[in-house]
Each structure stands twice: as structure tokens, then as C-alpha cells.
Image 1: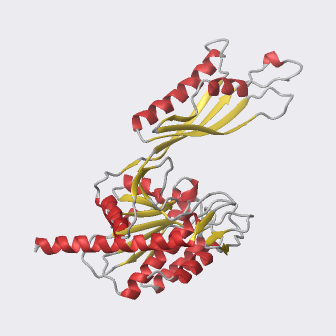
Image 2: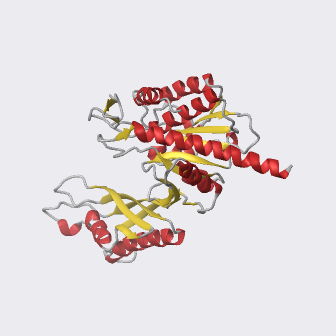
Length: 387
């Protein structure tokens, strides 16, 4: 039975701790103390130095007492800005901030749910196998904690990340992403006295952008240019401009084709502006990084089947879903840990309107309990049949 007050109190406590990306040390210390008091073996890896933060990823292992494969439960400790001095308000069954900051339900609702789930298991003496609670840092700034996770600390081969909104779905498909920075170099000149002596880098970049398809490319692919920085003054022809963006797709061929198209479009725009082949200006430079890999879990995989059966046992429906976002699960999947993503009911994440209903958190706690019960039961039954 879910202790609603305890779950609510834990969530309120967690969101009251500032933990914006790269500054998760305080919440990590509290969670280490709490999880250790619950009997977990605690490890903190060396990701802090790699991500430029003050805390590493936190791995808490509960050994359990059933001979079944380890199950991983994942959430992230960091939040986005404005995430300092959060004042949580609980009214009509819904948590919100006071409107000056985000709430932090992304992803502290997940941490509270995982803790409550384990407490219920322990209080009821419910059988379970090993559980590895993996709480990452810097998820919000490019899944950086997961990318630098010490995977030698992880024995699980499948699990669940609680980092979505919908409580009626399990994310089984998520895209891969390429992140890019493009620098266009032109030539400065006085914009009033001698503009013809300059080469306007912003103009060249604009011509290239105008030839690109941005936004929704197809049902599997998106493209976005998110920032443009350039120029120094209104009376100077800008000699450089920097653009940053991303391409995402569930199809790796489409991902690479779209990335190549962006590169060629900018190269063509710059080449067309040259007055001589040996002229060093204008020119364009590219930095392209593979941001994260795709996730694609088969509908009949035990991670999916167990979660859907658990929902059905509770009289609910849980449908496989495709998302356009990335999560730690993308990194885990690439490292051989099949990870379905479940929702906690959080809404309007990354805004000051963020909220989460207590009943949705209770519902996810119930679902997680049933998933762990089924996971344990299924493997115990299998072991008995093999004897």
C-alpha cells in the first residue's frame, strides 16, 4: 500500500534542494545517506570531473533475496534553470512551484517514486532480486552523466527509466541525434562608407538557412537551428556568425543524410560568394558531434511485456510509444542495457508552470511495484521449471 503522505513529503523535500546541472552534490549527499540507511550499497563514480560538475553518478544496489536477474531503476538528479530556491506548493492534489521557478518534478518525482517503491518492498518483506538504482547527473545538458557513467558498476541488463510524462505509455523508440556548430567567416568593412569591401557572414548564413528544411522533416526526423550569434555593431559588416543546432531521427541513414545536406548547403552558399577560387574568404567550418544513439525495443521484449502485463493486472493500459526526445535510456540501450522509459505524470517540464499530481505518482509507484513483482515471479517460475 502506497504511503501517500510519505511519498508527498519525500517529493517536497527533494524539490527543496537546489540541484541544477553540474551542482548536484547536495542532493546526492542526502540521497546517499537515505539509501544507505535503507540498506543499499552506495557507489559514486568519477563522472564529476568529466562533466565539470561537483557530483558523480550515484549507484545504489539493493541485493534482494531472490535468484533473479538484476533490474535497473533510473532517474536523474539534476534540473534545468530557473531551478534555485524552489518553493513547492501542494493544492488540490497537485504540486506546483510558486511561479518563479520550475518545480523539479523532472526528475525528482521519479526519485521519490523509486524510494517509496523500495520502502514498500522492504516493509512488506516482498521477494525481489537485486535492484540497481542509478541516479545520474547532468542529464539535462546532453545526457552527460550517463555518457560518463562507470558501467563497471552496473550488472543489470535491462530496466526502467522514469523520465517521461505519460503514465499510459512506455517509450520503446527514441531517436538518435547529431549536434552541430557552424561558423561562417566573412570580411568586415564599414557598413556605411564601404559595404562593398565586406563579406556579410550573416547574409551568407541566412541564404543557407533559407534553403534548408527545418522542423518536422518526416515522421521520424526533425531538424532545428537553435541559436545564431554574430556581428559586433550595426555599422560594421559582420565578418563571422556562429550557428548551433541539431538533427534527430529514428533512422540512422536519414540522420546522416540530413546532416550531410546541412553541410553541403552551407558549403554551396559560401562557394557561391567567392570572387576567386584561391580567395581564403568567405569560408565555413563545422563541428559535428554524435549526441546520442537511438533506442528501439521490440514490442515483445520482456521489458515491454512485463510492464504492459503489470499495467493490465492493475486494470490499466500501457502502450508502446515513440518519442522525439532523448533520455539516459538511449545511452543505456547503446551499452547493452535495454531500458524502457516510463512516465510519472509530470507536465509542462522546463517551465515555471511545471506540475505533477500526487495520484499520478501513486499510480506509478503501484506500477513499479507490480513490475518488480512480476519480474521476480517470472524468473523464479522459470528457474523452478528448469530444475
